[in-house]
Structures are given as structure tokens and as C-alpha cells.
Amino acid sequence: MMPHAVARDSWRGDEAEVRERYACCSTTRNASRKLIVDKRQLIAYIVDSMIRSFKSKALAELWEKGRAPKIDAKMHERIVRRLDRLDATAMPQEMNIPGFDFHALRGFKPMRYSVHVNGPWCITFEFEDGDACRVDFEQYH
Picture 1: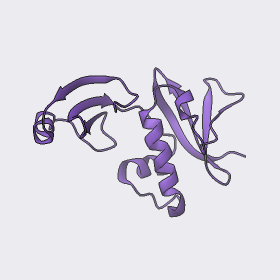
Picture 2 (picture 1 turned 90 degrees about the vertical axis):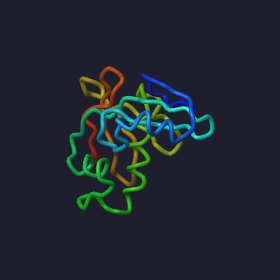
Picture 3 (picture 1 turned 45 degrees about the vertical axis):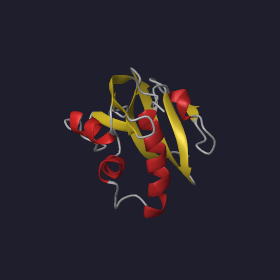
Picture 4 (picture 1 turned 30 degrees about the vertical axis):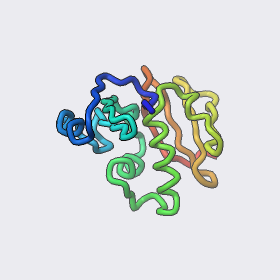
């Protein structure tokens, strides 16, 4: 299944050929381009990352390195799940899935959105040109 992001390039072939052809693409989270290989159809897609910037240094560290000492380890999995979804969305409404408690925040220009993580903790973000920006982890209630 093709991700929600717009594919810039695609190519068919066996997995080894696909990875060799697109070896220039980094698969790390902090890269601006991502290589996605659909193993069922053996199609490769190159997509641009959708998270442009973070306000929270701890959240950026968790996203890039997979760990962040300043954020409770019990919440890491839930946070990364929400960031993965945010990275794949092109519109804020795509975050409106069960369990995320997605809603727009009032009184912000530009419009900020929120998804629930645990207790009073939420991930808040803005959207600009189809990219999430100024993503923050905050206790705003």
C-alpha cells in the first residue's frame, strides 16, 4: 500500500535491486527523504518526510534516536506511534483515528492541533504546506 505522502519516484523489481537502485536514500528518521519498499508488490517509493520541525528537543531526540531520557520510557511507544502517523499524513484530519483524541486547539494562529498521549500529556503541532511543523510534547491542561 502506498503511503499517504506523494511519491516522487517508484520502481519495480526484486528487493535487492530496489535497495541497490535507491541506496542513495537514507532510511533514518531524520532524513528528508525516505525509502519505502512494498515487499508484497516489490515496488519502492521515495517520499518526503512530513515532520518539518520540533519545538521540544526531547521529542526530536526520541524521533531521531528512538530514546529520550527526559520523557518517561513508559510513553515512548505511544509517542512514536503517533509521530509515525504524523509523519505519514498530508492533512491534519488524517490524525483523527480512534484513541488519538485528535482535536483543533482554539485561539492559535496559525491553527494548532493536538493528539492525546497519556494522562494530561499531548503532542501538539501545526501544518504548513502539507508538512507538520513545530511539533511539541506538552502538558497543556
